[in-house]
Amino acid sequence: MTDPKGFLTTPREEWPRRPVAERVRDWDEVCVPGALLPIIGAQADRCMDCGVPFCHDACPLGNLVPEWNELVSREDWRAAAERLHATNNFPEFTGRLCPAPCEAGCVLAINQPAVTIKNVECAVADRAWEEGFVPPAPPDRLSGRTVAVIGSGPTGLAAAQQLTRAGHTVAVYERDDRPGGLMRYGIPAFKMEKRHLERRLAQMREEGTKFRTSTAVGRDVDAAELRARYDAVVVATGATVWRELPVPGRELAGIHQAMEYLPLANRVCEGDLESSPLSAAGRHVVVVGGGDTGSDCVGTAVRQGAATVTQLDIYGRPGAVRDEDAEPWPTYPKVYRVSASHEEAGALRRAPEVEADAHARVFAASTLRFVGDGEGRVSSLEVVEVDAGRRALAGTERSLRADFVLLALGFSGPECGDGLVAGLGLTLEPRGTLSRGADFGTAAPGVFAAGDAARGQSLIVWAIAEGRAVAAAVDGYLTGGGSRLPAPIGPYDRPMTA
Ligand SMILES: Cc1cc2nc3c(=O)[nH]c(=O)nc-3n(C[C@H](O)[C@H](O)[C@H](O)COP(=O)(O)OP(=O)(O)OC[C@H]3O[C@@H](n4cnc5c(N)ncnc54)[C@H](O)[C@@H]3O)c2cc1C
Ligand code: SF4
Image (cartoon, rainbow, N blue to C red):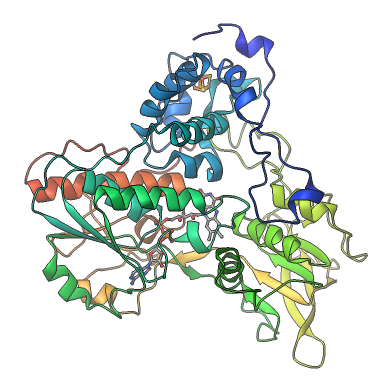
């Protein structure tokens, strides 16, 4: 610990966001470029170098947080980058996108604002790239073994990088035209600019990983043939089956799933389209679903020039601070969080009949039906207030103006009808995810399942941990012995609960 009193003398200070009026006019990341580095040393000094660092346990990657905090405080960026990459293949992704369970578990958070761990991670990751501390790390020699990784989201990428660096010959199959999974076409550029993804992909290619894009296994390539061609297969196809809202009026025009909408906006940013065929410009937008995907729809609709944007959440409004009985430290609590997109929607003019809060959010609201304009297009939706058990409260029905509705209700599991599951001989759990054993292996010998496809809808930090862990399992299978690759989690590990 460099400054033993840092946590007493320095208040928490986060990477500042650009003014709302400026950032809604572009798709660049919301934080002020260059404003993190000047503050980060003092923030790292707030770390108490705890004897039992709960930040470490709260992170599925087991990130060595106190070690990099000290190294940042000493301005030893090279060593900090080395310790950061010791547990995480892609800290520049998590440094921007992770909801930071490490900060919820930080010991300082018991009675003070937590250390800004995520910001420290991002600063080290970015500095490492700028200074050239993360050159490609190709293997010294090849094992002669081959692996096909199906899916190029964070799980597939982490698995592929680990296995390539261990000397195996790895090809990543991706049905989209570019690799990246949800980080490419789901998550908007204002949360993470795609240049970070491109830089890592270039590194991986230089290390020897091959990418076969626009190739859906089970459709363009026979899954059984693929299995026969490779010594092992990792299925990391994500949980992409979205949940529906089967209420009257769902068939009306103007109602879209989040993952029909967000990829088109991302394609505009990639330069593939001049404008999105599903644009919220001039519309009264209602986003149904209170999670992160919904928040990404909010920020995207604001940038497209929506007239108003409102986000509905079926859950009640969480408190400003953690409920110590229900969700005590060091668990990740449900509290009222304000994303950059919420700030932006809150700054827009509000539809007069919408009694939303300052961040354009309506809580405890369940959608009863969509109402059309007589010409087949949605014009409003009817909602009712619900209690904690989601029971409708009589007399609370009301109508919200909406001529553009986005459904962001989560995802139920992997797609199974395209020949991949049957072709590889995979089985499913009752909840629809891919079955696997304690070693990440499926019922088919040499076929492993990882990430959201097997775990269910999760987070990037879990996906990277899954990728690293499945790589260790595959390496052990291929070499016939214990692998030296790290396995940060097992397939049944879950976030810390009380
Ligand atoms: C809109 C949105 C925003 C999110 N924001 C965040 C966030 O800010 N922070 C966070 O931590 N998490 C976020 N998440 C969750 C996070 O993105 C996922 O948990 C994570 O991407 C899962 O990684 P994965 O590699 O398992 O799957 P995915 O990222 O879904 O990747 C799976 C890949 O497999 C490919 N594929 C599927 N079937 C085939 C096939 N048959 N052949 C070839 N390829 C195939 C798909 O095209 C896809 O590219 C968000 C999710 C969404 C939808
Ligand atoms: S729990 Fe918080 S204060 Fe303790 S070592 Fe981790 S980051 Fe530092």
